Amino acid sequence: MARTPATYLVHGPSLRKQRKSLGLTVQQAAARAGISRSYLQRLETGTRERMGPPRYIRLRAALNATDDQLSPPREELQEER
Image 1 (cartoon, helix red, strand yellow):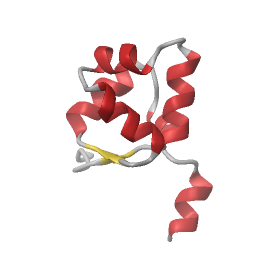
Image 2 (cartoon, helix red, strand yellow):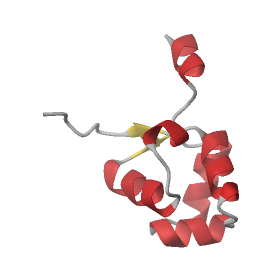
Image 3 (cartoon, one colour):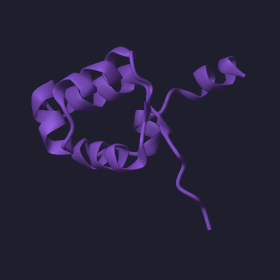
Image 4 (tube, one colour):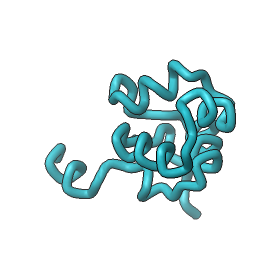
């Protein structure tokens, strides 16, 4: 059985792209996900890169997104190693 990670790594530009593709403002997306506007802005700008599971799951649902749509591109993950 797969374990839930302690935190999820999110990619700010991908997050912003997904939000904008739905025509949502930062405030609207944050409200849908039950997080603050400033928290979402910090994620989108890269000031924050990790989210705990409850917030991540709510944000993913609010944006109708998959893990792949919110995660850093695979080539960026490989560069970090």
